[in-house]
Every structure is written in structure tokens, then in C-alpha cells.
Length: 312
Image (cartoon, rainbow, N blue to C red):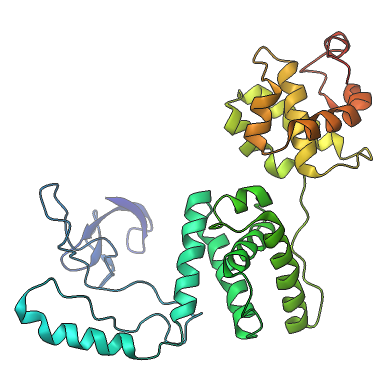
């Protein structure tokens, strides 16, 4: 049951969906409002006692415009060990011997998808990373370079372009052994290649300290009120000339805000949640300390509370 506008009744009425015929019928006058509609739901039901080997899906995955065949090529599955599968096993061997121009791309896209899943990234970021890698691969200039670093750098650039930045340390944690230095070099190389292809400078987005606040605060299990105060403090900090990285400023603000609340967090916990070294947080705290009265919201802490903070 649902609501839709009926042209005969001249008003919005309840409608009935006839799934067998694909019709949408008005419940008051019986007018067929829509016919032969496509049912996009599953055509089967899965029960707990069914074997996982029997896949009822009769269609493949979605088309992929980045592949030469659109991702719609036929793949011969491996036999299950019976003697009657001799033909399929032979065909499978011949198919594997054939050259597939998209084999390296498919493997790269799978690696990017795995890294995206481990970081909890949305599909738009994964698709953007695939597009960036495809542009770099088409230039045939990445051979001999660390492919793990190239793929990680594509994902890093995609996160920044989609305004969902991740730190290099976070990308490095899922990069199959690539170091931060290798990812940094790969990022510079990719940006240079994209600029050569497009003939203009490539904008990869600006990082702000506020981009990391909600995620870092969630890692520490902070309350909503404390998170709100931290976000307002970070926005205020951008008005001052504090020459620290946005990640370091975010970590220092979180540490300051937690010290002003009842849920004080030790410096070690803040360092683990943000990926910023304890010494870097101390130095950022030292730079922020003279401006605390203008950075910390008045509704969260008063002047007396700020004076009780330990001096850097």
C-alpha cells in the first residue's frame, strides 16, 4: 500500500501494487495508474538451512565503464571435481591462457575496494579512486613503481577530492605494506601525471582540522556536548596564525576540550585515537594556549576553568 495522485479521483489516494501483473491500481476507483512496472526486488528467498554453494543469482554485476568490455565478459567457473566437468575445465584453462587486457585493472580495482571497505569509505570515493588509477594506467608510465603505493595514493587523493579526507597514516594502515614516504611520493607522481594529461593544475582539495573532528571524537567515545565544543573550537582556531598541520591542531583541541570536561582523556589515548605523536600534540597545545579564551566556547568553559589548565 502507498499513496499516489489519481487523475480520475483528482486527489492523492491509496494505491495497491499488483506484483504479478506489475500494475499500480487506485484503491478507490480501480484506475490502473501504472502498468508493467519492473520489480527490482530479489526473485528468490534464502533460508538458513540452504547450502551456501547454491547461488540463485542469475545476473552478473553492474557494468563498469572503466573496463574495455564494460565488465560484462563471461568467466568460466572452476569445476567442482566431478568427471563430467572435463569440458568446462578445459575451457577454463584455455580462457586463462588467453590475454585479458583488463586483468591488471580488475586486480587493482579489487585492491582499492578492499582498502575502501577496511576504512569504511563510501562507494563514491572508491569509484573516484578507480577513475584516477585508470587515468594513470592509460599513460603507461607507472611500470616499475610500487603498485601498492600507487593504489593507496589514488585512494588518498579521492578522499580529499570528495571532501572526506583521511590521514596518510590511516591510508598506510591498509596499504599492503606501503610506507608513508612511498605513498607521499606516489601522490606527487599521480598529481603530476594528471596535470600533464589535463594540461592544467589538479585540485585535490584543502584539508581543514574540522574534517577529522567527528571521527577522532568518535574513536574516543566523547559525548555530544564535548564533540560540539571541540568542533566550535576548531573553527575558531582557523582565525589565528597557528602554523601546525590540521591533524595536529585537531588532536590538540580534542585534548584541551577533554581536560575541561568531566571525561578527561590522557594524552596517550588522544594520541592513539588521532594517530598524532604525543610530542606533536604538546607542541600544538603550546601554540594554542595563548588563544584559549577566544577559541573555547563560553558556554562550555569559563575563564576560571581555563586558568586551571596546566600551562605548556
